Length: 366
Image 1: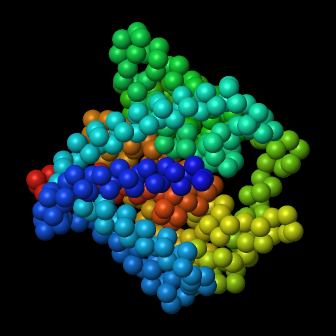
Image 2: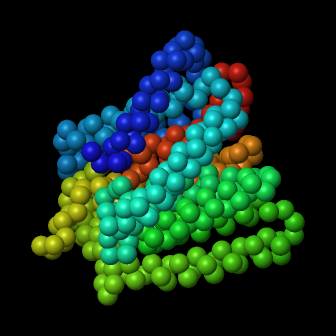
Image 3: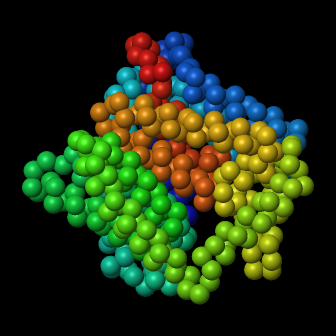
């Protein structure tokens, strides 16, 4: 069973336990729920995608129907779960869960890379328990890095700080070993954001902290450029981009519909899954047409930046805002956003819709 399926199953089990444990509160919240602007925009976007898929879609099939159904489940679940607690409680609980998950996940992968290098490293690239280096790089950079850096930034006491530094260095080491350029860029952005927000003092003092991050991040990207030896750095991405542009040119206004399985064949050695399109912006223009696709991307990134800003006003929210910004960077290299059953989509959508929730107690975070 693929590791991402196992993680998704664990997330669903936790959510199911919460639903059972809080069933009485949920019934109350359903009756008194208040949908905020962000959730409403997400719902309207989902309705558009669904209607567009039904009337325009090129690949209407059972698999895509289940993916869309899971998207509706996430929307409804979010509306229910986050309406009977204060947002601060949600931020604190989410941050705690992510922190302990990240610690366990990093230590587990650290064990794998040293104990079983022959099973987890291929061509000097670490892929761990996943299918490829980019996948494990995404787990480490999107889900684990911000909580671990956040732990380091707030650590107090010599032993706590030493452990936090070792854990942070371990996470960075694992990400560098994947040689995933997208993951390295995510780490750079999250680090710059969290340091900028966390460091007090003059502008010059903040810049002094950021310059080493930019230099070291640039060096890491140079090293990652040799990931596939003599193969050009953008060889696989270039093939995906050519396919996307071909598809867009044939249906520039209406698009091909959600998860359209069109132009997936590049040559006899390059056949890509329907949802592997290399860039979310191009994916949206291909599937929903240029006008609507660009509009949806603009709305998406506006919500990412505004939600990250709202998170920063909560204790412990800096970590969650960093994850959202990291996801925004990663989406320009991968297309998991609308693959609702994936663990990345689960985390992203729940985080994106949470900070602006209105609780039944009257707390407003608009």
